[in-house]
Length: 345
Image (tube, rainbow, N blue to C red; front, side, top):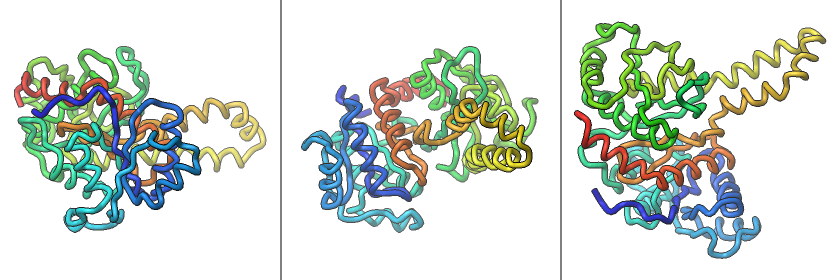
């Protein structure tokens, strides 16, 4: 493995990726420069970025700029995007690989981010496949003060082996231990039933590997209803299944809001009730909002890579950068490397 990350936490932020770029990354950078000591490397068209930072009152030199003459469109095929060597994604990934920054955050094209990261940033020794790990809210767990749990993989891979799922469990457990401060995060395998023999050959074999892994707090199979209930701290599943679950979870905040809007219009007393509950409803809505947790870590690289939601506004990007800086500070990549070395993956 390469040299450990520098104690100076510098995060490379892709200023040209996402539906609201570059305005949202610029606002996020200005807020982070004002309110935190996190080092920022803003990658994009400096002719647009530098004047905007000055207008926002960011002192010269507080945010480092790296010019990128190109950007990856959100809808571009990932393989095609890989040829854009001058894109903000490509240059940000190389900056992280070269040590100019210790983490990368982008709200841009997911497939392109994965491919550029794979090309530029080495994987932790022994990692066969990186995993996109989504953070999602759950009901309270007595042993874990963190309101969020981890679900992986959620789309970095279409096809998986049982050994991949074991590695995902080990990486997810190490990440949760450092970020959520839980000594032994509990792990479950997403399946169609709780019994060990349920599911296809992939899930049955993975169950056996997870159960035999030393030091892994494996709680067995979990079903779809257990995900949001907080049955475990880390839910492991094949990428195609995890992506479906993630998109369903992401929709719940909008569903609750729209149902509430429809109901409260029907009767005056219901409108009054909603007014009285407005603070509580706002807290629930905030918890379900992806902006609260910023983005999804891509685990398995020697440096931290965070994929923010494509629709991210400034607040979501701020939180994604803060999570990335925290992961650098707590040496999450080192913890994953150690966990894989001591596990049976």
